[in-house]
Image (tube, rainbow, N blue to C red):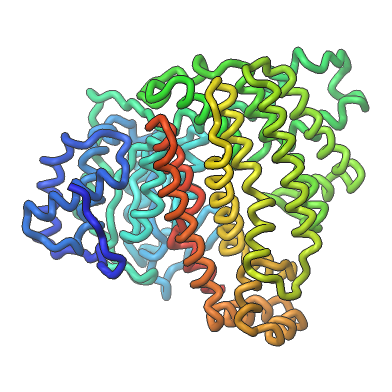
Length: 551
């Protein structure tokens, strides 16, 4: 059964109490027919069958999908010890008027004032051993899991957020259970505590927590970038028998520290996953797959090289953009000076090619060709971006610049994985896929970082849409305002000109085109990964949009 959901259909209606209970009971019956990790099409079909069996409307599809996902994951989740779990609560559960908590980059820090249910849930979760985050979205949560601080997630959120954010966790292979808000709206919301508490407290010591999917690969990727792991890959390459504090080791120390700190590691993750699936297929995704044994040292060097190129570009980008911070830390040029930073960026480029030369993998000439071609294209894109002023630039030209700034990196990361596995690459199809990903990635950046861009007076797609709508004079006037007024004024212009809606609409079109294109790739394991990658990069998460519109 394949369902065709009309865009006009609201599938996120909350069923009444009796129907929610019936859906959960039926979900337990059907859970055995589903396999992990769950894919959205299979989950949608199963949820539609469930509703048909119960003679309930398709408007409850979102809730039915969550119920099915929970029933399928529950035994795996229950096997994870409490101290290895993380509870995610939305800050919209708080009483805004009486809340005494304060915020940091990780979310709300509850003051324990007892004015809302968050305090009691925090206490119970902490007593059991959970880590707890009170925030919108799952970025901080996934970071905790990837870092190895937690192995399972229990989250409370609205259905829209569950559909978008929690789907990514399931794709990664993270055991997760979700409780939809009974009433949402981003303020004074209501959670189903009677359903939450039994899931919070469930534990089955007789079960074994076995995690497959992409999470073990993502964790293996992050482990590559500890200082000790990077040095291990480099030890037999440089041959500098000098003490660490010697002046000739200074550039290396700064570069390796920058390489090891922070970052999503998206590009090396793409390379490693593509290699594993092209070489080993589904065997790389089964629970307890020995990922380290499946990754030869040469392939690991290629992945580190790709990240070295990326980190080199960030050093140079920060200089070109005049940024003082990146990910909460001083940029390299602010910490060590402009000249030293340029040298460190150059060193990382050289380090990348040194790692490639030592990789000793098949198709080396093709790999070097793919990477050097991407390097040149990225420089062209960055040069065009630097030349772009706040004057009117047609949207099509903005997208062309965006494609050159980011798409070649996706294309190279995918191509190197394929080539290292000894498989052929469909260059034209891969270029189209990467262009969609690159354009969408930059649009996401514009939507997420629009306030930062407004203060720095950087040109963006949002500005281009506003200019196209005839807001040139208003945008020019905004530049003369104090910083605190500039952001609010720009937000109003973007609302009135439809820039928000146009950018998000374009992002959705890119997602749909990418998902359609991924179906043309083989084998199926790679096709599924490209589908996952498209949704990870291009799917707009609800809370980011709300934040962007409410300065």
